[in-house]
Length: 63
Image (cartoon, rainbow, N blue to C red; front, side, top):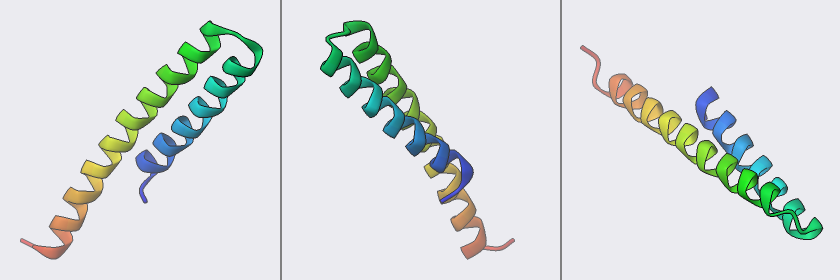
């Protein structure tokens, strides 16, 4: 895993915790913030996935 993937997964986990905390305390605002953080984390992980695919391709197909 590259740094983007790790940061993305961390945001996803933090967002899930925030969402569940919001559910437990009855805070719709915290639920929305948690879901938003999860979406941002998924996007960041996706960027990391693309970077990893490109890196792997370049290693397998040197110029």
